[in-house]
Every structure is written in C-alpha cells, then in structure tokens.
Length: 260
Image 1 (tube, rainbow, N blue to C red):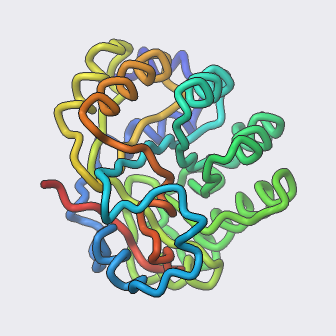
Image 2 (cartoon, rainbow, N blue to C red; image 1 turned 90 degrees about the horizontal axis):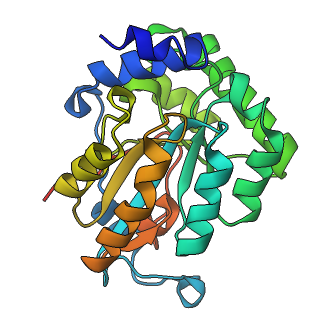
C-alpha cells in the first residue's frame, strides 16, 4: 500500500518500521504493563529528588512526546523547534544507518536535555529472535549511544510494540525498561502534516505518550502546531522519565498509558 513512498525512504530498516507499525495492536504484547499512574504510586511520597524535578505529573496534566527510528536528516530542524518551544522529548533511536550515520545529532539530542533511548539496531521484531539475537539488537545500540553521549540508555521501545518474557528478561539484564504508547498519528502513512496534527489532537489525553517518527517528511512540519494546541489545552510536555517520576522505570518492565 505504501510501497511507492517507502521506496523513496532510507532502505530496508525504514520499510520495516512502517510495516511493523501497521500491524501493531497495543493489547497484544502478551505481558503485564504498568501505567504512568502506577509507576508514580510505586515511587511513593518520599521523593528525595522531588525538589529538583521540573514538574509533578500527579498534579498537572502531562503528556510525553516521543520520536522513533531516527535520527534523520530532519531531526536538526525538529530540535530547533523543540528548543524554541521549550519542549523536552524522548528519542528512541535506531542504530544502523541512523545513530551511526548522525553521531553529531545524537550528541545534540543528549546535550539539549532530551531523553536518549534505544529502538534496537536494525528494527528486527524481537519476539521473532532468540535471546542472543535480542541481546545483540539492543546491545549494539546501547554501545553506540554510550560512545557518543557517555551514557547508556535506560529505556527502549520494541519494534512493533512486540515483547514477551524473553525480551523482558534480556531488557532487564541490559538495564532497559520497555516503553509503549497510547497516541499514534500513523505518520508513516501520509505526508499530510494537517492530518498528522489532527490524529494526534483527537487522541491526546493526560499521561499519554505520543508516538511520532522524525524520519517522515510530513511529521516535523506538524510538530509546532501540535505543541501549540496541546499547550493551549493545558498540557505540560515531559520526557518519559518525568512522566513516571517519582517512580523509576524498572528494567524489564513494560510501561503503557491507559487512554481516558
């Protein structure tokens, strides 16, 4: 359906992203999930770092903006927008042909205060792999990001949102919590920025996690108006760790918001 458009993109890895997203069913991951509210409750009230927290999502209407499968050629423009709007985001980075191709952009993402996270090395569906293959997909991106930023990610997003006990075990071993989402614009399917905006705004809810891709040509142009409208509606933008605080994303656990 999208073959002609995907043919103009960046090869096999990008095509896999679109195909995977088409098949996604958030309820089908087969493992228990934790909501942001539950994570905050588990963090308790004795928040030693509370004084340094930028926002308390138990008190304000938070939403997390996340981008998958970059960085790409449009990511610097996205970073300019986020800086201008004073909005933090979480970037789930793809290793092959992305992290290794745009190391300066990866460093900029980290230096500007965004959360740098793992989206595997080649976007293989982790539930189709054995544990050693899962470990390689995640470890290679961990190593590449650490080499650039000096810090290993603590969050990962499994391609297609698919996970199971084996994926969770390897994630726990590598210190990675798994982050799913509740709002998607299906931006792989359109170049229409107005439609991307409409889809996000129709689904927006408190404690939501928005999934976008900074590698598709219609997405970055949609971001300023998405941010402006959600701010007008009273939302505060946060990174995924801020959404869960004072709770901490536990390695191996799977986090997914519930829609209102």
